[in-house]
Every structure is written in C-alpha cells, then in structure tokens.
Image 1 (cartoon, rainbow, N blue to C red):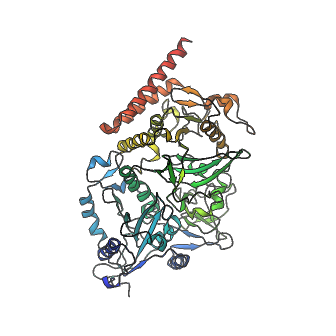
Image 2 (image 1 turned 180 degrees about the vertical axis):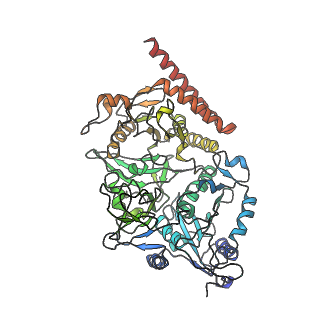
Image 3 (image 1 turned 60 degrees about the horizontal axis):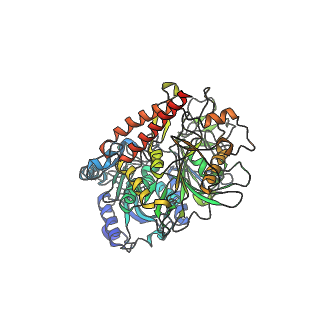
Length: 619
C-alpha cells in the first residue's frame, strides 16, 4: 500500500473482543485517513523495529551500546518541549464543573473545532492502535484505555510507561470500562489533493490542543508529540480523567509518589506524598537513606490511585509502568538510584550528546564535559551561553529497572496506605515536619500547599505559587469540588484513614542558607513520622499542627546546630497570621463551591495564632 493511499475499511484489523473498540478504531481511521492501521502487540521485537525505523528517520539517535545499552536520544522541535497548559482544556458539559483553575470549552464546540483539524491528519502515515492498562493487569484498582497515535515515538514510550499491547487487550472485554484516547502530531504527509511532502525528524503542528471530555471519558490531543501531551496514559488519563472517575466512584487519583519505608527493627509503612515540581519528589521516591538500617523502597514516583479495600483502609497502586523523569538536576550526588535506573533501555529526550555517544545534562556530574552536542544539535562547550540540555529534558524507562523498586509495586489490589505527606518549597514559616490534627486539617494542609516563587523580601511570607494537593494543573474538574471529595473520602474512611503530615526540606535562615541538609538525610523526618504512627513519641501542639520535640529528631551522624533546629521548628505567629490572610483571599478566588470545612480550619488556626501572640505578649 503506497503512502498516498488511504486505508480501506476492509483492511482495518478488528483485534478486540469489544465491538465498541473495533468500531471506534474504524471511525478514527475514517476521520484521520491513514495509509495503514497497525494494532500494537507490546513486544520487544515491535519496540526494536520501531526504534530502528526512527533511527533511520532521524527521530532517534542510537546511543553507545557499551555505555548505554538499548538506549536512544530524541531531539524534539524547539516549539514542542513541554506540557502546554494554555492549550489544555477540560470540556465538561457545564463551565462551572471545570472551575477557575482549568481552561473550559463546551464539548460540542471543541469537537467542532477539532474535527476539521483531525480530518485527514494522518494522511500518508501509519495509525497505531495501542491498548494499555493503567495498573497491574486484572487488579482491583486498574483501569484500561486505548490510545490511537500516528507517532512511533509515542508507541515506544507507551511501551515503557504502561502495560501496553496484547496483554492489556485481553482485558478489554465488552464489559470493561475503557478510555478512548486519540493523538495525532497533526503533520499529514499527503494533502487532500494527493500532494506529498517529506517527513521531518520531529513532526508537530504549531496549533495544539489537549482536550479532555470528563463525562464521556475521552481524550483528544492534537499537534504535540511531546511527553504528557502525547503519552495520554500519563497526566491526561491518570489524573485529569481519572480524578473525575475517582470522584464519581469514590476513590482517589492523586499526583503523588508512593514508597515503602522499613525501620531497622523491621516495621514497614507505606507512604504516599504529594509534592509540586522542584520540591524533592523524585529524591524522596528514590531515597537512599543516610541512617543505618533504614530502607526506602520505590512503589511509584509520580501518580497514585487509592481505593478503599475490604479492610476499610485505603489501598494504593502506581498506575504507571515506568518513569518519565526530569533529567536536569538528577545526578549521582542528588539521586544515585535514578541514575542507576537509566543505565540501559532508556529513551532520553532533549538531553546533550557526548562525543563518545552517551548522554549528559546539567547536574548529572560535577565535571562538565569539554565538548557536547546540545539538545538542539549544536556544538556546546562550558563557555556556551545556553544550557546543554533543555530544562524539561526527560528520561523514559521501565520502573522494573529501578534498584529500589519494591517487591510490592505490582501488588494487584494495591498496598495499604499508612500516611500521606504534603511538601512544598518554603524558605520560611513551614517547619521541617509536622502532623495534621485531623483528616480535615490534613486536607487544609493539602489545599494550602504552596512554594515561594520569589525572595521573602517581597513580603513576610514571600510570593506564594499555589499548587493545592500538587494538583493545580491536573484536577479534571472544579478545584473546590475536588477539595470536597477529599472531605468525603475522610468521612468514608473514618478512623481507618491514613494520618496526614507536611514536610519542608527548604527552610532558610536570615542569610539565605538552607537549614537542613536534605536528600538522604530526610529519612530523619520520616523516622519521626514512623514514630508517630507507632505511638512512641509525643508532639508539641501548635496552631498549625503537631510538631516534634526537637530531641525526638534523630541527629546522630550529622551536624545541625541547636540554633538551626530551633529555626527549623519555629512557628512565627505574626508571619503565619499574614499567611492566613493571604489564604483567605485565595479561598475567595474559588468562590461559592469552597467547602465550609476549609473556612472552619482557617478560622481555627487564625484564632489559635492570635491567642499565641497574645500569650507571648503577656509573658
């Protein structure tokens, strides 16, 4: 079949036992008009064949087989390097259901806008059909989808990031709930008149849409071949669509890591943690503890789905099969586990190429190579004014290669969750670690999660970049309704709910110096959390939460002065009162849908801070 031809309906394979899936595949082929339709089987042979084709096309560069076996480098178009939040839409039937934190478009209006772009968008290309599972095959929390794409890069990446191909297809029976996910780079090789054009190494379109339809559980992505815009199982399905499913079915889809922590005496706890970007999330997910006898095992690095088990507790899975991590800043000194995970069988995107056929990026090693080919394909030296790797450069690898991966990570029905952590990047106010006073207070902590965007000199609490529950770009419905869902889950779980904590590795002194060493030393804060779960330590009751007694933080083997420890746990009432005022204004932005429980928590903390200030003044 020539690339100028259009596949005929008779030539479209009907591989699924589910007639709805076969009909959907046929309808998309009719709309997008590819030259060929291929159902992907998820095999290594398929991966190798696609990789070989992409190397020939210039999309991938094969890396040095001795230094980085089975690995490849991709360079995207400079106009297609990250998630495009301004072009990401929640297409709920009612605008009020999308809320103020999402871009909304009516479903009929969006489809009327997209259909002319989709019409013929795959002319001259192969249309790949990728059945995939989010979670262990057959698991109680697992969900299924089918992604249609014209990008072999997406097919290869989906094979690393999800359980894709024939094994997933077996579970897509007529009674299985599934998510249809359509992706095209929007770069047809043949126009409607039959005129052809040469392909490019990284096809994309200047016009981009990432559209989610919550009521019908559909995803349509047009114009981008990069990351979460194109790997539709990731943020699109696993968070934006899944958060709506979770609301409707009473479970939780969260932007969280998941770890198993084991103490020297053999007690293990499972901890989920929500961190905005650049707040130490991957370092915690793959922590190599600096305290002897402690062990941290990785269950997931980015997304967690939690559902109530038969025992009434929350049980969690990592719905993904791989890691799609940010490369810059990941290095042997900061995250050796991640570096060991990507020693082989990895797709790198927008990192630099070394002269001996390996990869490099800023923060990877202390020594900077004397010469590189940068992510744009240009010569680069340490004197160059631009970075060697794009700041959002990525690595994509199967989780099974992670040396700290837990034996429980594919537990079909998930692992019980003992604690939930939240953490932002705060130079002031927020202590190293504290516990919430209730589930409602813990939800308040998550809702007010923020990082300081600028220096504290701009105000007592700095300028805060809000990222509630680390879900600001990822909640598929109104943020205030999402907060309300947390409260409903707390009611459902009752006394079996996980305890909630907040951590902050980034507090600074008046000279701008970090007070805490971070990285593998963060196990010391986690040890206090474990002690609280075991009931072996008391806490100091502060308005903002339960704080450790300083002597209960294990400082054996590190040097942190008594003065710095006091600063790490200082609760400055005046600064916190300013923060409460800022929080009240933030709550106003969410409008009438804000659950009253959050106002109640705000009022309680505010009143207790004023009492503390008054008591201190009297003393």
